[in-house]
Image 1 (cartoon, rainbow, N blue to C red):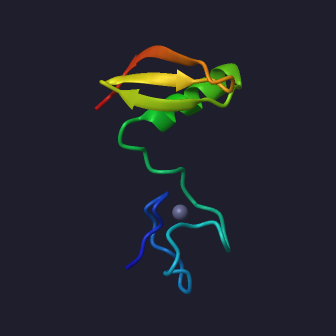
Image 2 (tube, rainbow, N blue to C red):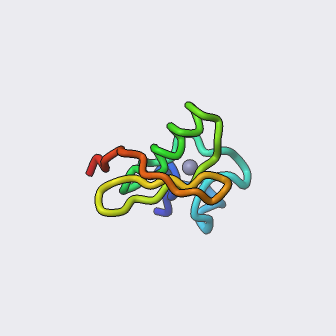
Length: 80
Ligand SMILES: [Zn+2]
């Protein structure tokens, strides 16, 4: 059975060929946690600062690139 790659729920009948919800309906669940947690950090920074940043994990720490292209070390460590 094909499952949504975002939420992990089975795809509705007739949409099995798609990788995730969103065409006929929205995902019923929040996205599955990403492996390295970078997405969580990105969302956290968005909540705190309102800025859309790019987050990457490197050597167990998170690095953030702001919209101006400046990269910062966050000091946050990876959970896994
Ligand atoms: Zn879904």
